[in-house]
Length: 341
Image (cartoon, rainbow, N blue to C red; front, side, top):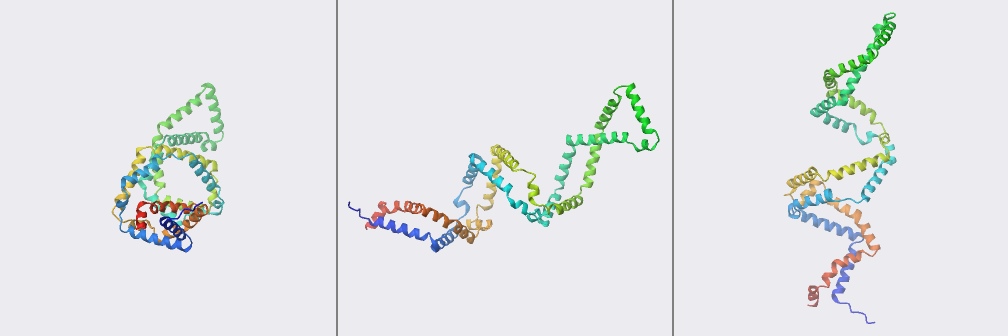
């Protein structure tokens, strides 16, 4: 069988492929990555954000992934598995709350919350006006009055008074069946009619007692106790199954929320805010504002590239990828014309 003669173009293609393969291994790889990063950063200084991407294109991309993308069933299952693993991790039993939040950080958060006096007052007003709170207050007042009448110390200090009251009560019940129940009903109605004044008084009491200094002192005292506790103490209040259930509920809620105009409107507003701030600055300045440096880019590339390249090479895929990107040029009429000349 006659062996086909290798053309000059094919020889050049093969030489170019082998050259690039050598460039993607060992020290040559690092040198190439550093060269490319330096070149990209140099170009980034000459380009502005609006030169390379439009605001509408970013909005549409965000909408695709945040609104339109339908996650396959495997994604929720994967996240649930990860949540279970995080919940069961032994590090919770080795870590105290104070190791995750310093005294200073707790105090700063507390002070910021205490600054929000209007919100605190609103929450208190909402709580006091809540029907559940009203029912609780009415029940407390009712039982307080009832207990006072049945266990009055005055009747206990007078010889025979308690027995006389019991006797009188028994006689009245026999004479007027259901009288005791009627009295209780009247007492309940009285308490219900006058509960608003009690609620107003309780609101004033809470506002007086829960001023900034009192809340700060109480919270700081509680923190001194809590910060010594292991994280696992709080973790144990939730089972792994509870975590999974909460995730399912949260996922379903997000799935509905993402379809609302409110959600989409916030996404668009966020993109608009980003572009209004960064639209006219260079990509180099943008990277600097974010905090991404040249050394970080090189380090990240060297962290992932060698293993990825080696994996492709072992499976015979790397050379094919390089060859596909070069052969169309070397086998093109234009290249043949140059080589032939």
